[in-house]
Amino acid sequence: MRSTTIRNHLRSSVIGYVALFVALSGTAMASHPGGADTISAADIINNEIRTEDIRDANVTTADYRADSITTGKIADGEVGSADVLDGSLGAADLGVDSVGTAELVGGSVGTFEIGANEVLSRNIATAEVNGGDIASDAVSGADIANDAVGRLEIAQDAVGTVEIATDSVGGAEIVTDSVTSGELGSVFQREGLGLVEDPVAHDGIWTVGTDTVSCNSGEVMLSVTMNWTDAGIDVDHGEKAFSSAEIDPSGSIDTATVTAIFDGGGGSDDPATFSPVATCLAA
Image 1 (tube, rainbow, N blue to C red):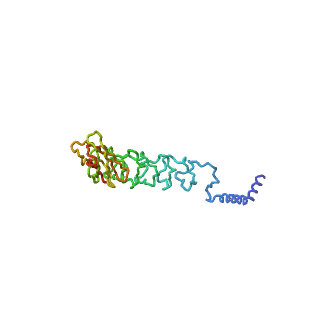
Image 2 (image 1 turned 90 degrees about the horizontal axis):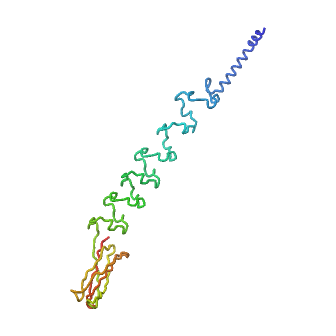
Image 3 (image 1 turned 180 degrees about the vertical axis):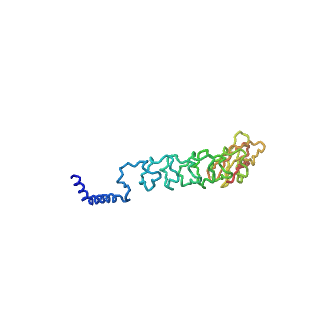
């Protein structure tokens, strides 16, 4: 009797059960935009997908969220030139001392790649800088260390008068027998005329006479001496001597003061005369 009642219930309700199944299936299909046999994000529990659940080589760029791959996700040595976008690396991306000669393409570093005052002596290989590497008028005295430039660094005939400071070259800078007439300008002798009036001959009292001699404008006085032109009345025995000469280069022209002494007599009627002689070099 009980089984008959259940059978009659199923027969009368089969259409309702079918309708319920269809309704439920339609709802499930509607929740999956990809259709049947698809899985959406809502169907997956967080952090439940593992490496073994993903088929090899099936994850592409489109599957990564922006900024989701960090340093820890990348194996050491796995990023090559092809993986880096051109022009995307800046100074902040490079480690200190991480870029050496081997990392630079030949001829790729120019003035704009080097910061002001960034190149030191230790950054330059020995004998690697020549005239072709230096711009005209680019190196001044402030850029050269003391005693850094010797004869080997100076090209032949490269130093002229404009490169030499006034009064900077002395005898210590000139090699013995290295200066010839070809290195000098024209040389001139300039003369003056002085006299000494000694009243009494040979009395042991020497009379002093002075005279000056000057070079012309633009000339440098190299030396000065004197010649006696007349020794007074006692030509043969008159005591006479060249006492001193002082060169004064401080004025607009070089001038020397020559001092002579005489004890040969003659007084003002027959004084001794002398000629101071200056050797002058045209600058």
